Image (cartoon, rainbow, N blue to C red; front, side, top):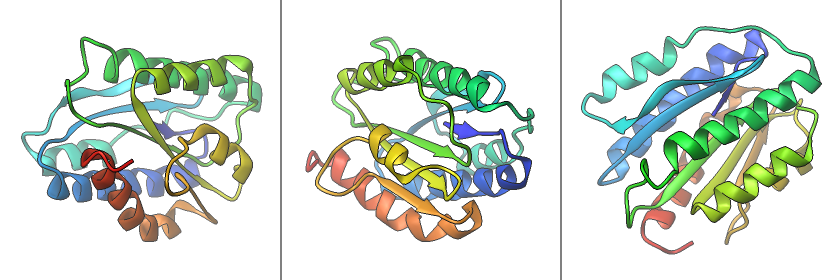
Length: 185
């Protein structure tokens, strides 16, 4: 789930997502990826599918279009809508791969206005079996990142000054994904 509300962060956010997808692809036996982008609204930009060509998927991720900004209230609505789309299109019974770990990674550079709907949707994602890892910039309250991420052995949230500094988080996120896939979390 990618936040496209801040243009100066969006290109770095897409590169971070592309690098993370590549790392997960080479580390896991099986990987299905879907990408939901949010700012003014939420859109399923890359439908959940099995990866046949990792380079094409990474290129598609890096080519996602900047859709513009939103005020914090509108961003909160779009954030909720993005969570809903993830659950419906990536973690529903029809989209789910039985017996496979489900991981949702939320990358955001903006602090949305939080609403009860966001927390209800996070609860629904958790009940659907998704583990959530949140990554954000210093513009996003660390407590919010902690609240939206899943509990676990480790903290499942990461924060840096900008997405250009988040490459150091790829290995810890990869470790959590491998532990999740192995049933250790």
